[in-house]
Length: 464
Ligand code: S3P
Image (cartoon, rainbow, N blue to C red; front, side):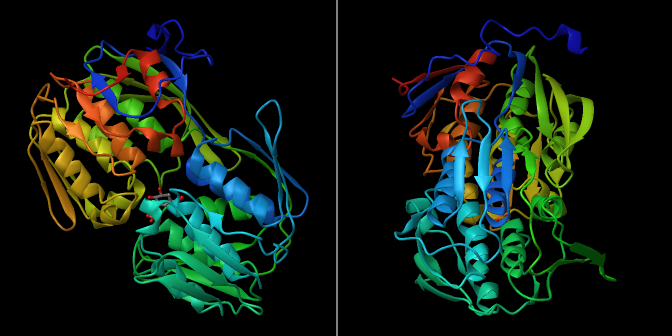
């Protein structure tokens, strides 16, 4: 029934009044209606800039996410010697230096809030014989980097970190990197990617053994740029992913799909605000990213896909979501890597659903931009919703309708906590306040304007 979707005035207009992002209040929303496209995929955007910077010739990137995280990667690649420019039409052009050709930056590289930028660049730099100093904001400086530094030391790189492998850190890249084989101790696409990127400048094959599948954008994009990637599976079904070192990467056009992790906020808002119907166009549908949509369907969400296609090696579709009654479910641990960034907003859907939603195997949420299990637990409690956070699990006791709301939620420099609770506020009896919405710009510039264009009511301020 896509024909029924009618964008309200302004929903598709690029000109929207900017709402200042400090403390925001999300009021109960009327039905959400309209058709929107989402900003580009963050994971793919980082990788396109990095591989473009390592390739020979020009890479054009259409639909790059222009959020702070990705802009920090663009600045880092420039500081390392690549040419990175945006033209007037919004297409980005990267002229690379070739593998091994990055130059020593003359100042500290600041990656802001972005764990992906930091960890993937650590991989790239481990294979370059240069010294780089790296830092980030208070959130990033608190996150564990040894999970990446440890395997990268085996290539011959040296890392000097603060206690606990924390930033700021110094990287002295290997002069003659040696290929390694590394079994991932944690399901992390960032660790996998860092090792594969370091392997680019090591002679021979570098192999990552991945017991639990994680997002494969690095592998797909390496193939797109001309590298050789071989994947086999062992008797336990672990993937052995090998990159053959020292390939010639050639600049390529990259089309970045809409970010499914950003689509999750609009999708859940439409699912929980009565009488809503929205369409999200051009959303990335990589099966290693779509666990949230599987879970929502199990909860009884009304989601249909149209126009399924492949763009630059990535599956893409248009998605329609209508509101419906949701039931609590148990989300199995093995699904976690396919929806790792979506649990905070799933908690908003779970709060409105009937019955308990149990999320298993989610311990990694404790080392994201914030301790997300703790942040979600506290935020739900502040809004009158019962939740239980364990070491590796989260249970939300659904209200079977509109939760009380009225709480103030500390976002702790975490964009996804801010957006998740603004979505929750669209369906609560009293408005929900988030104390600091500034981090939203790291991944979803224009979030408030886009949601308000669909019918949400998010305004600056705090509850009286
Ligand atoms: C990402 C991988 C995930 C995810 C992050 C982006 C990536 O992190 O949470 O937002 O682009 O590789 P982990 O690898 O730590 O799970």
